[in-house]
Image (cartoon, rainbow, N blue to C red; front, side, top):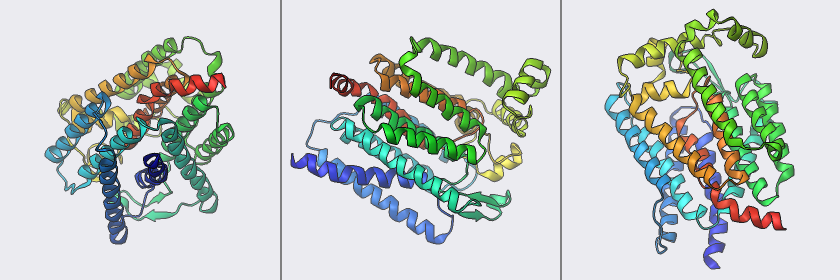
Length: 398
């Protein structure tokens, strides 16, 4: 009982610090650099205290922990070996963040899974509501990075670049929806979160995030009427591969397909270059073909501007292929398949919802390359969803 009491005190605080530090952006200067290192030291202290607290219990890493750690080991090694610019300790601390999230999974999720989803959903709710308020109070951004890495002035919001808003909202809605579908609690907050999230991405003009979050919302509302969702997931995978091959990999051929051109211009209200993204994708594909197996490491924006003619590849798979080639991208996709397979085994509502969220993430990532580290928090939510089955059954009985 005392151990549970200590857990109930520490658990929400640790999630608030970890998730807040992971997603909240700060100006890059000497004062915030010191603050960053202080927060990282606090994270390590929390991590050590958690490990000691649960050390006496029989805890063994599961398949997800092992696979993710091996992937991040590959990611970190390739970063230090291949990157031409100075990285410092950035890749190491990125890996440390993942280790801490995985340790939280071992410590909390396996012992108090219901509250784990609750606290994660609450933390993201706070961040999303705060971000919406700041949009209203500071419509021109919280600060401006002047001449950001040689690319000109860049406006920054709570989560940094405005395009990151949809990614944060996706994880927040997923966490709250999984908790609500399982426990039948927090319905009001779920729909408030959906409304605020959709309002935020529409306000910033992110068509991709608006479509992605709308798809997720439709599924949440009508999931009871969707039979045999696995068929739809297979159809999505096929369409995704075709879309990636035709538009991203062979982007120059879009204008030759009249039906595709009409869909892009009339339905998506975009030009056939997707705001010059197809040019960037073509340059990225050219560089990938020059080093297909191991890529080029974690190159900075100046490298991207030189070789891609853009601040980044604006596509998740292209980003992974550039950073670590087929080895890194292939093993990442293997982890995705592993998580999806485990989530669908239990056939509970939360698990299927989590897989739909992964599909939405891939859809949104066709046009944006989100930070890869936080992606594994979404995968963790989905991986542990089968453990919610018992709670879901008890809620249905009540």
